[in-house]
Length: 151
Image (cartoon, rainbow, N blue to C red; front, side, top):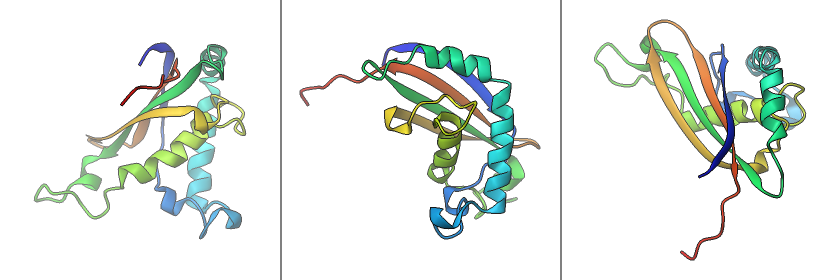
């Protein structure tokens, strides 16, 4: 994967699962928890507005795609029991990704990257324990579109 340009963001949120994002489904709207997380992310993106514009300037719909890395930081006590196994409260990593990707990428959000998620061609997602705080590190990359292979 050839990286054309990239940037990193820190979002001071306690991410929520896409399963808790909407009341039943999208037509009933976002839950209060999702609205709060969305507001926090959108406010945090204001400080990255110039960087997002810079990154977006490299993007050509005919040549490029987007690759994203998400590192979700979660306090250790929310991840593990006292015996050291994962708690039942540990979020499902794949359910965290969609809400963050939409807020950071989609054109409907003013300070986002302004690129539709159909251009997303790669995603790496990890959960990392912290001592006390939650947050999300996001790495956004503009990459060359994948080329067809003979596989």
